[in-house]
Amino acid sequence: MEITLIFTTILSIFMIILAVRVLDLRGSPVTKSFHKPNREIDPNDLERAIRGHGNLIEYAPLFLILMLTLELSDASVTLLYIAGIIFSLGRLMHGIAFSFMRKNVFLRIGGMSLTFVGFFILIIPALEIVIS
Image 1 (cartoon, rainbow, N blue to C red):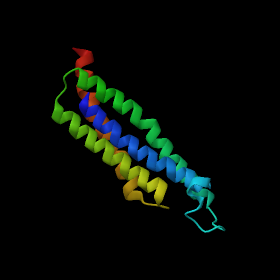
Image 2 (tube, helix red, strand yellow):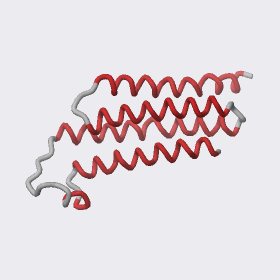
Image 3 (cartoon, rainbow, N blue to C red):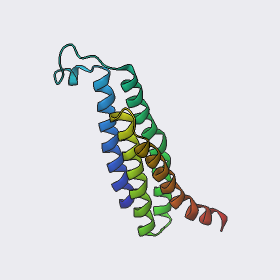
């Protein structure tokens, strides 16, 4: 369970960063003191930050469940680390593209591609277990 715990921790930290970004753009009293009093927030920036945060929340739990299940099934440690690194990098790229940038096609598409690659790296051995 140690490998899954490592990636759960990494993704949780990133989730908190994205959540704070959303809170900030919503005008949270906690972050208000860091900005000018007359700060104007572009509704598109807020919407993108919400989607960046929500997208991580949508993908990470299933990935981590799959990772934990394989780890408990004695899957290859190397395979788990590779999948975790690729998936986490993909989520980081995608989250940054959505939450902190107006438009970055490379980070957005690259992030989603790495997310899917991370999933497939785990799905293949999971199917082998199910089929056998």
